[in-house]
Every structure is written in structure tokens, then in C-alpha cells.
Length: 153
Length: 153
Image 1 (cartoon, chains in turn orange, blue):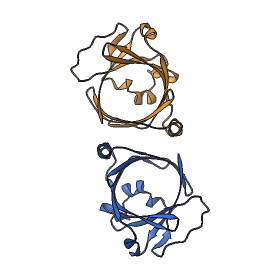
Image 2 (image 1 turned 90 degrees about the vertical axis):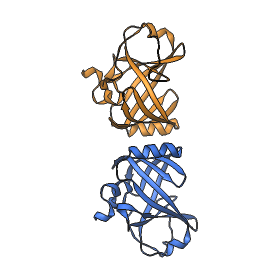
Image 3 (image 1 turned 30 degrees about the horizontal axis):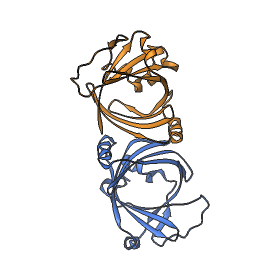
Image 4 (image 1 turned 45 degrees about the horizontal axis):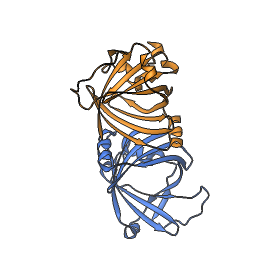
């Protein structure tokens, strides 16, 4: 069991690109309700099932299980359409890891940066390439980017 | 990946009770649609996530993953209500294993026997305690026993 404390920001320039290697992510949802989601994710040559509960502020209960890649491909076929396709670039700054997601397909043009914090009050330095915080804006939840993609905003 | 070939029957007397030890099952569904289900199951001191695809006759694609018991208990709390509670008794006869499910709660009174076959045309002997086959009757799908429990038939 894990409780995620994650903060999410818009990305305002390209300076992050030199700081890490992008990995292709393909993911879909079998269930995408406000208080519970079931996600299938292929990340490079690995695959995972992720179960998330209700969001409470910036905290959310989460369980993740690795599964065989081939089984994930079949499960992606059962997911709601369209799938989310993006690259994720992991960038370590100090003792934190930032993840920059650059979306493709119907969400092309959207770039988001997330950081997971050890506790809700943890102080951290914002890199120069991040802008406005969108942690509480449900439009940016991946599950909602399927129903209302960025290209339609 | 597994393709289930399962046949399901009503149970017509108590002769099966002497043939195995019942294990308590508690299970719920995060998703219960005709063509895809996500099930959380606690079976005795073990727990599993099970993903099933579309049913085609008596065959159905299925993936099952063991998970920690404590995480399954939390996930059961996210499932649709009511949960299904039953005992399952595994009974080996020849080279096949029968599973007899005796339901509790809103489905009390219902007893079903299932057998998984190595292939669709496999010949097998029916034990004396099974009656009518209900493999194709959706009322007996566990996912449907939540929405329309046996006590309301």
C-alpha cells in the first residue's frame, strides 16, 4: 500500500529535455471514476496494473502490480478508447525525482511535470522549467484526458 | 494468459459435502460489464485480482494475479456492493477438479458446481449430485449475482 503525495505543474520551456531520457508510455483505463481507477500501463518494456482510490487533496491511495508485457497488451485492448500515449522523462534533482510527461495523439501539445513528495509539507525547489501548479485541476488527471483531451479545450 | 473452458451446474443434493473442505471466499467487482470484469477475491488467507474478457460460449479469456491479503481487503472496500460471500469446496474426481460454491447473504440457498475442462470437447462423467447445466445462463454469473441476487429471483 502506498499513499501518493504528488504535485503536478505545467511545463513552460524546453530546458528539461537535456536532463533525461524519454521512455514511451501507453496506458488505458478499465475503470475511471472519481473515487477509483484501474489503469493498465506499458512503460518501455515493463507493464503494470495500478489501482487508485479517492483523491484527498494532493494525497491518494495507490496499489501497483507488475504484470507480463504480453498480458498488458491484451488488457490494453479491453480499455476505454482512446489510449493515452506519452513519453515520460525522469529527472533527478537533489533528492527528488521529477517526471515530465509529453503527451501525443489527442493530447499533443500538453507537457506536465510531476513530483512525488515524502510528505505533504515537504519543502522543495521548483526547477526553472515549471510553471503553474495544476495538482487540484481534474482536467489534468490522466483519466480525464481520455474523455476531454487537450486538443478539445 | 489463460482461456477458461468452464461448465457450471446446479447442485441437487448434499452428497458433495463429504468430499472436500469448504474455504470461505469474499469477492467483489470493481468493474462488471458483459465483456470485461475486474474482480478482487479473498480465498481463505490468499488474495487475487482477476481480469476476464468477453465470454464466447463456454470459453473466456482470463488473467489472475496474486496480491497481498491486506491490499485486497482495502480493494474490497472500493468494490460495488454487496460483496459476494460464499464457501468453495474443491472436489477431485478422476482427473478433474469440481468446485462447489455455496452462497451466503443475499444469495443464500444457491449452490453451484463448476468444472474447468482442458478443451471444449472434453468428455467427463457427471457426479450424481449435479443437475441442470447453467453455463450459458447469465443470471448465474457471479457479477450478476450482485445486481440480481438469488433471493430476489
